[in-house]
Image 1: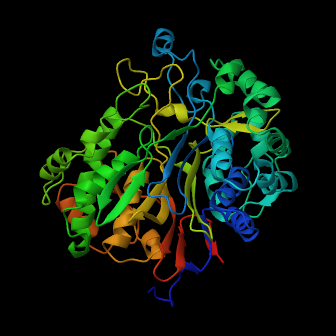
Image 2: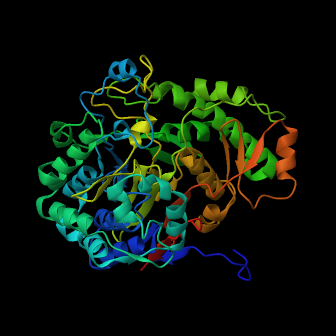
Image 3: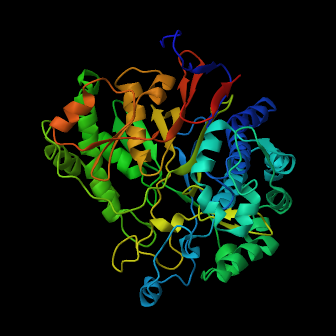
Length: 524
């Protein structure tokens, strides 16, 4: 129980259905769908579409999507990879011959956006409302306007240079050349028209016709290799989820090309420890050492499994678990792993559980803040830069190649027990996401925190040769970590998460939303 004399928020308890997102307008839109009789998938699509309008630097229809969906009665969740592919002409040799690097604002960092196709697939298979109906709230916000929320305004100002360099993007997202302030009402009429076209024609309204021609023309004018055929061929993929057992729970993640495998690997490594009995220094140290090992393998091996073999079975095996545990010295940090990849932190995640017990875990992203900063001028589609995760390194599993998906950081999670969903959960924050899953789940399962307390708790991340530490850790923790050889540095807020815990015994839902964002949890 939190101290009610101090600032904070409580979990939201609901008897029928609940939603948790990182933006209040998204949460409200989802609740309205649920109260009108829609199911979890309907509500999730309505919410994420709204967020693609009202939080444009974090997500958009020009980005990608992953989902885990657990229909009531299903023993295993459905996993959907809604990430896009590189152009058919994208051979690594082509880039090497021309000395082209993958940079944040390059058209070569833009893969075909997969989100719209993923939404349509989820609705076709599991929804009870049409895409056209569910896009109406997003269309209204794009057309009539929405007030900019405080955290959105903060991030907008930090990323203003990304859109300032593209005339069309600057016209759409800046006010008198500056980022809009808190409460500024913003409108995106071109995006509203595109959403209306998708509402009328379905995903073909995005991947074919004038919207596709606008995106391709803009990318090719900048030197991109994209074609109309690349867009027309876009399709999500239903994949088998991967899982590990932790303290009697089954933790499910999407398989590579996402990084969810790293979260399962870390849970396997730390499962031998009595985390509740560890002091703060020991716990952060253990997480750091497990994190470095899992992420080292991620960077070397995770890639598009359709074109490369990712040794999932070995990395989840008892042999790898034992080897990783044996390499951890609780008295001393290992030599740091140096990661050359860029940080990528801009994503939205949402959880929905409906009155029938169906649970959706969905994440949508344009990669970095405002993605590539490239706006297709007629359609108003801001394009992501997910292709930055590729390497241009022949022979590496994640080297860029034709019609290939890059390694992805965005990962929805689903916790199950005895063949029933317990919690759709997720943590935004680029590289941090896999570590975020571990901190969130161990906070609840091992440390006995409620869902909101687990989201509120200070976070750490062994990244870039040191440990990032949020404020809020006990006095002496940083000194204790330094004494073990860690390089520590202060962290900006690490990610943002949502979770809904299904308490079947009590017949209630407990929902939490991260205070690091503007969002909220609601239920009825």
